[in-house]
Length: 284
Ligand code: PMP
Image 1 (cartoon, rainbow, N blue to C red):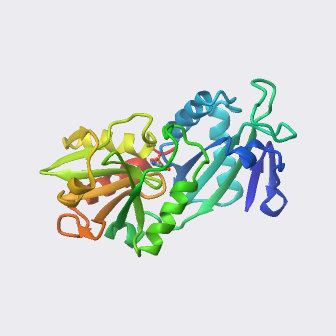
Image 2: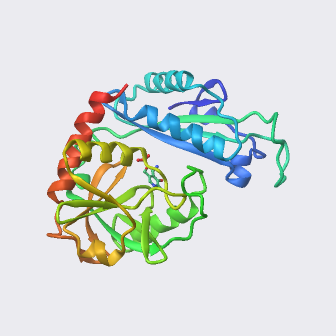
């Protein structure tokens, strides 16, 4: 792969970041992942908006304008012949040249890294159409989950707990209510109504979530934004999750109990179809 590091295009083996970079030492960094489908960037504007918000919330400089980011995304896709997969970007606060909890509020140049991940035919992925089984785990992340930081230790450990349990993902539970999945927003469907947690600092404001809720409204589906419990999910008619990487993915089992029929439900499947179709149309 050809990767991008601070203005340079390099073979991945030659791409390097300082050991003193705060992204490495402190997890002082934010990221975005934009999906590429059939050569198009999906929901790009949303990812750009959220990146700007994440950097602003941390008092970090956003090193590029939206136009520059767009060009970088197009360039990296072209250099890597990427037509289906994802583009990862990370912005760290930079390299102060030493380890220190305190940082200079100004004058530190952010570190920018981008690379591609090819995933051919992801829209066809049979496992995603069939749906995921999930387990619940306690929510242990910090309380600014609305900022897309690279502090992904608990989500990683939870994904491993899911794998160890022979399932596909884990849902975080805090004060009795589900916040989100390891790397996705989550939904249940009861009596035709889609229920998903309202936005706050408790969860990431998913870009796919925003697009899917817009599509649901266009399709005259009823949506209620409120927290729900694991028990409600287990007695729901359907469940599903959304993320840039997995689009809309049905969830068919929660903590060993089948959701609804235990098969991908009609609303989740319809939203998956419509999201893939519409997001390619709207892609840039
Ligand atoms: N929640 C978390 C914790 C995530 O990591 C992700 C994936 N970035 C999402 C939700 C879904 O967000 P998006 O639709 O923007 O990919």
